[in-house]
Length: 338
Image 1 (cartoon, one colour):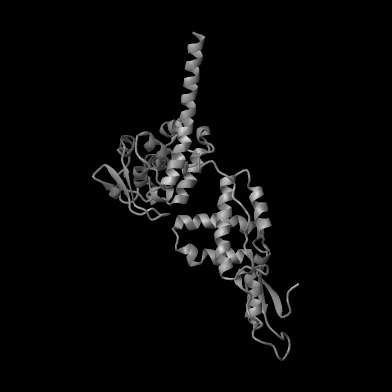
Image 2: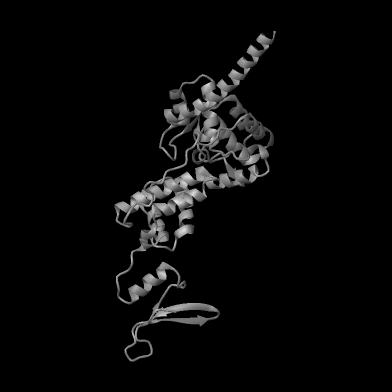
């Protein structure tokens, strides 16, 4: 049932809505066209405006709050790749509660979503991080009466994305082709994020031995990546052309498109199931550490904090220690047997 003063007109199979006070009387007011979807917040806001009533805040629904946050400087000043991640993670909230009152969402509801995503803890934590950032922004502007995430804790992780092992690296060399192979090789041997790899090109090579990342998208840090022999050999097979290395039919790839192409390639490779391109940052750090570089030197190359470098290296060192222990135990067993 439509509100008083609102009527519907059907023309050529399409519905049109109008507001007109006093319709059919001698005191009929101006006829005002309304949005086409009577279920949308914009439809009801237009009615209030036509009635001369103050508009309801656009942030009174979760969907409206998300839209306002994503359009705010708190998000728009971030790198496009980071904005995309916020949009992707907050889409979970939009699907869950989009049309509901933003004031009615409480930490218990966020916790319920976290519990439902427990099988994918990284995804759950990313969702919580986006919700937490939006909650802080909205609370400071009195868009919501309370925190949306207070008391909700992220899932414990073992140190970020899992580094790729020898089996995965062999798969890259043996089976990946085209632009996906180029991107993975760049990430493997430079340790850069996908958002930075897609911007690298021939003009970023310095003295034929270094790749310069002028400004990392996420941190703004400058990095100098040595072109190791394995990467140099790969690059000799690449076509020289203007713009970034990673192009598809002459079109420059963005991070999202590269991820889509990687997902498609990974689907047919059992060795890569469960591994993400971001894990190559850890792989690169471990490789540089085993080559004898210090955490500070690796920081200059990869653009990663020393704390994170040490965390990745501890993961690798524990594995190596475990392997060394097996060798030692076997040697002891043999000696005692003799």
